[in-house]
Amino acid sequence: MTAAGETRGSSATVIAGASVGTVFEWYDFYLYGSLAGFITTHFFSGVNETTGYIFALLAFAAGFAVRPFGAIVFGRLGDLWGRKNTFLVTMLLMGISTFTVGLLPDYATIGVAAPILLITLRLVQGLALGGEYGGAATYVAEHSPPGKRGLYTSWIQTTATFGLFLSLIVVIAVRTNIGEDAFKAWGWRIPFLVSALLLGVSLWIRLRLNESPVFQKMVDEGTTSKNPLTESFGRWPNLKLVILALLGLTAGQAVVWYTGQFYALFFLEKMLKVDGVLTNGLVALALLLGTPFFLVFGWLSDKVGRKPIILAGCLIAALTYFPIFKALTAAANPQLAAASASAPVTVVADPASCTFQFDPVGKAAFTSGCDVAKSALATAGVSYANQAAPAGTPAVIRIGAREIASLEGSALSKADFKAAKAAWTKGFAADLKAAGYPAKADAAKMNKPLVVALLWLLVIYVTMVYGPIAAALVEMFPARIRYTSMSLPYHLGNGWLGGFLPTTAFAMVAATGNIYYGLWYPIGVAAFTAVVGFFFVKEMNGNRIED
Image (cartoon, rainbow, N blue to C red; front, side, top):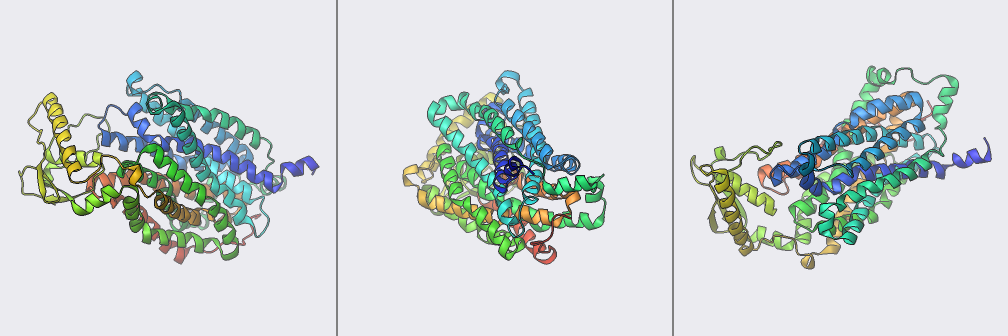
């Protein structure tokens, strides 16, 4: 090989090329999550607030839903075409679809076509990302020297956090420079449009890379797979490994990852009513402080193994999520925590009059006293308990020792109900304020260092489960079908179990009234993975990956 070829294929160039390109792809994908509230306003304005937010999260999750299909399509191509060529295609698809979101007309301009087009672009992003991770992780691992595979591939693991961090920084910079009103009206589009510049840089970097030496050797020897899908999923020995990789590794890794980075962001802004710019800044700082630990745990996995670190992260997270998020409430919104303790809220209503307030088409009318009460409390970010009342009993809200009648609008016309609800909501807001419940978190009373420390701890859990995962998956599967085999369990875990976490957890909170109830979802999955992984997954550290 020439000197130039050696430079192009050096370890630093390989890691930088795969990692930097993936940072930009994750920036594109996570930008949507950071701007979910603005997406609700511009693309789902025809529905009520709670439904709109859930619907926006579902649109966010739509990109995750198709990731396993992207893993199959592009994983197969990666085992047929090569690692480099495939993740060049995925990056191009991601960048173009994200740029287009910045140009998309909103609901007020083209009606229902707006959310349809938005979700279509999200699906394209998800397909592309489904093929990206497996290619980047495989490419770096197949360049890694023995004994350093965990460290080298852990650089890939930093990319998702850096991508989220970059998206937060761009959003903060734009909001600060143009003002909140301009950002809400049109400035939210700028971060999407900026992705065109990032795409150009990514393509330039990746075009300079050579193919993986392991794949090139298989091509030279004629040993590449002719049918990666059949070999990966049609033969039990390999299919069994795919199932174990999902249930014993990536499922728990995914929910810990999304809880620590996305659900924490949603929890602060939606549940605790912390200002959006401040929330983004606090999360970004915690990510900046925690990201180096991806490399620490990747390096450590070369010494002690991948399995102990990943499963320990799952188990510790499952045991400590409740106290961490309760401490986060006390630190981020102490007035809310104090009011919840001194004046707990209970909705007392006939269960038959309470409905699950999710209306994707915006046609349902939630006019019962129970529905009005729960909608007002959810909008205010107030946690509440439910108490069944005898059939036909009018709904009431207890705030401490005080009892407030809810608005019963079932017999009112649409116009009369709207006017009556506006008046009732104004009075109810005053009742909450009198009981000590704040409309917004007071930044002056927030314990910001403690908030950052708690968010940092959540990120540390993320680094434990995510830092060694690429090396663990690469080592589980043979080279000829590696791209296909490792991509599917990774994206089933991260695309479905992880990607739907914010939507599922928020819906659980909205249904029960308990702002912590959504945590049962990641706790259950992480604990299950810890058990399955401990008993059934073999340690793969040190395995040959050339075969």
